[in-house]
Image (cartoon, rainbow, N blue to C red; front, side, top):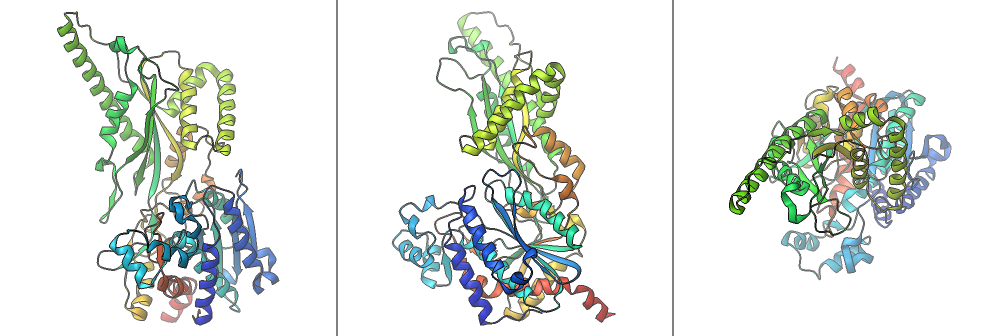
Length: 557
């Protein structure tokens, strides 16, 4: 269906360099510049000049920056539809330092990088002239350019069999506001045009295996961000045993969980990385001669199949064991202190207490009712304003809301609260959705790629880099929805996923992208041959086979 020629290569190349030249730092208004560029390019194509209603900019609901999802539909014959998905934001360019002015100019950047002391692999790639360097080259303006060309190519075919829907989203490198907003758009377009989504293609870059094989991903790892808030018992350091240091307790929880592979999921030889903490500190506003009253932490948990509910229960168990151990250690220290000071030892009164945020919130609501709700909702509004202004991030807002609810508790004894902060990415995998035959997708890719270039690809069930493919379906939906919504402070105001719409999608996924290296680093680069030649043809062949699978089956029979 799709013949590939020199004109196609030149179009992708031109698009790619134009997209790279536009700074589109994630979480900023700069994303709107590239949205305009992509949209204007589409409406300038002959197909969309004739069918203006089939392309648009869908403003993300409740987005303070008013960013958009750029979409374009090729309406062909029948209901079968393949969705092309990419993100147009990129990591900021500040890491480039003095090279910042060249970060979006690949040729100038390559010359500048030659002056630096870099790893041998980077030097080799600079000298080979096979790699294109620059911010966003690999992640993922290469994929965006390829998908724009693919949409144009399909729109140029008369009586196109099936439909092709292009989606370019914002904020993927931050909170995925664009793709979360696109969930409703996908449902709206499907219902308006009577579509059936057969597959969604993302084009994130891949890293090669040690044996040189490329990777095709048929799903994406889940990401879950627990927040642990510890209220201790404040005391002057001169009367240290009358208090309980929350930072001590939190550090013991940290020791139990950090890099603990018992929290890793394993499927068919693929394993999710263990948890790693990204924030841990006390909640003191200024220095004084006392131990902190509270400490808090949050960290990333990656999942392949474990549900948020199961993760919370595992965390609760670890927190309880850490709490018991902490109290035992303090009592041992106090007993030895009393012995040396010739004082009577009386066992300290602390007892382990762990609550989920849902349990805490419902307890306080039942006790204090409207008075609590009024004050809490006011803080939600204040937190949202501070997030918009950039004063705080959503994780800090989450902790502040937990603190507010804890303040309403009548007792002031030590406790641990387990909450959830955004962003939440559900794990997704074709094997679990059950809508495709085993190895169907990878066989399509390999049959074409091996016959054309002798290049084979390996299938991986999960893209471990976290991606917007997570928002293409929802497994174990009722359990997930209840746990996430009830334990995420400010749900619906500070952060939201349209779960009902997401449940109705459940489309098979695949990531077909170019080979990229050093994503988010100053040496980010992408393989030129993949961008301008191989990957576009692999995607085109895949779409052809998916949209014409029924015709192929008929011929076989």
